[in-house]
Structures are given as structure tokens and as C-alpha cells.
Amino acid sequence: MMAQLAPPTDKKDYSRPTSQFRGRLPSPSSAKPGQYHLYVALACPWAHRTAIVHSLKRLGDAVPISVAVPGSTGLWEFAPKVGVNSKSGVVAERLRPTLDRANGQKLVMDVYKSQQGGYNGRSTVPMLWDSLQKRVMNNESSDIIEILNSDFNHLAENPDLDLAPADLKSQIEEWNEFIYPNINNGVYRCGFAQSQEAYDSAVESLFNALDKLEAHLAGSRYLCQDTFTLADVRLFTTLFRFDAVYQILFKCSKQKLKEYPNLEGYMRDIYQIPGVASTCDMDAIMHGYYKVLFPLNPGGISPAMPRVADSASLLEPHNRQKVADLVVGQ
Image 1 (spheres, rainbow, N blue to C red):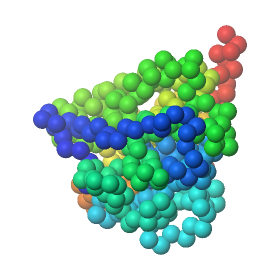
Image 2: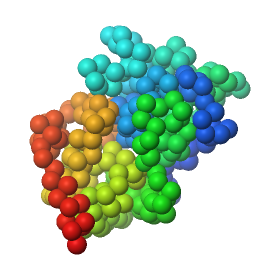
Image 3: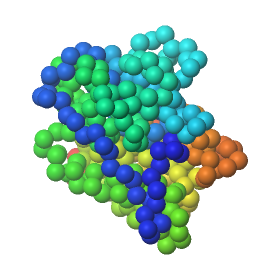
């Protein structure tokens, strides 16, 4: 993980590099069962969003998954001693680390390098691999969630679920353009700022955005009214990690998620959607951030997990249906 982070800008601000692979399927429904392989990691919020869509669409081994873990060298590696017998990498209804089920490599970097012509760039997850052509097709999470949502319906067990309805496309895009710079990447801009000015700017943008979302969710169950969409998936993976990781390690300390009742309830609402909790592993998240991002946490000590992040709290009633009922009744 640490070895794959981007250098700061001249202003000492964190700037995330663009993804190098942005391929798409030739046409929807053109994929064969098992042709495309999804590489993820449980700690990574960008990979998490793809795992959620994969789970909700119930793609199973039609699009197999390999789950990497953060290694001691700062690179994504595959668990050498996993006791996973399930083909899908799911144990007791939860996603778990696996071997490399597509290529038999030890590192995600080795998978990237194995394609024709090799590769010397950043080896990130998520990544969608074409097993027939032996190449990386896409490693941009925003693309991959769209591909999983729309292009594998002929293979999905839940093909009728559409997380990007055509009539909400403009709203979804507006939310995406707001959430990514201010929140998804905003927490990283706080954590990896290398000047007070850069940090102050990032914190202001982050919490102004959270304030706006808190107000919006007072009258809307999800970002796009009463419809759960890909925009909610994007937001959820950051909120899920907020109090346990970003508020502490990344110095996003102005306010806890717990102090935003609408946002916290919204996060629990999404967690309780069948198929989401199986992709969530707070222990893996805590280990990935506190044990591997050593420049931010040189002692490698993991703090006590906030109560808002434990399983009992996540399963508490969220009362978000009342928001939807209130809006309908107006």
C-alpha cells in the first residue's frame, strides 16, 4: 500500500494519480462465465466499492474474485496460508483473503507484470483482469462498478438490480463529482498533506461536504431520494472507515461521524442491505491502515475500535425508512 502512494504536489497537497487501464467490454453481455476476474483487497475503500456491487448483483464465480492483503513490503500480496475452500473466497458468508485464483502469483504486482509487454507502473486494486487475453482490462474503481452493474447481467443471479437507472444518471454524476474530490479523496488529502496550508484546505473541504450531506440526508433516505445507487456505494466505503481510521490516523478530527446522526444512520442503513456486510471487514481495515501505513503510524499500534464501528452498533436500527415515509407523505 505505502509503496503505491502518490507523491505530493508542489503545494504539498496529495494528488492521486490517474488509473492506467480504462478498458471496457466490447459490448454488454459479451463476457463468458469466468472470463473476467476481479482483484480486490478488504482494507481498500476503492476495491471495497467493487466488492459491494459484485455481491449485490450476485455475480459469484461468473466473475471470480481474488482477495489480496497488505504485505510487509507495502505491496498487495496473496495470503500464503489461507484456509479457503470456497471457490468464491467467501467463508461463513464473508469475503476472506485468497490465493491468486486466476494467475497463481504471489503479488498483485506480479499479475500486472505477467501481461504481454510487462508493466512497471503502480499495481493497484481493484483490478479487472481478462483471463482469456491475459491482460489488465481496467483498474479504475469508478469504471469497474459501472461494468459490474450493467455488463454482466446475463451472468448475474440478481440481474434486475440496477444501481444506475437512466432517469437518475444526471443526479448520480453530480453526486460523484461532489463526493470524490471532497470526501473519497478528501480524507487522503487530509492524511497525506505535507503542509499546514494543504491540510487546512483539505479539512475545510471535507467537513463542508459532510455538513452538506448531513443536511441533504435529513430529507432523503439515499443520495438520489429513495433509490440506492452507485453514488451511495461510493460514499459508503469512506463513511464506513471514517471514525475507525480517517478521524484518527488521517487527522480528520473536526467532527466524528457519530456526531452526524443522518450520515451515521445512512451508513448503518447501507451496511444492513443484504449482501453489503459480507464485504465489510473492520479488522482487515484496521490492520491495513495502522500496520502498513507506517510513516503515519510508526509504532504500528492499532487504537481501540470505536463503538460506532463494531458489529453490534452497525446492526442497530437506523430509522432511515422514516425519512422516506416523511418525504412521501409531504
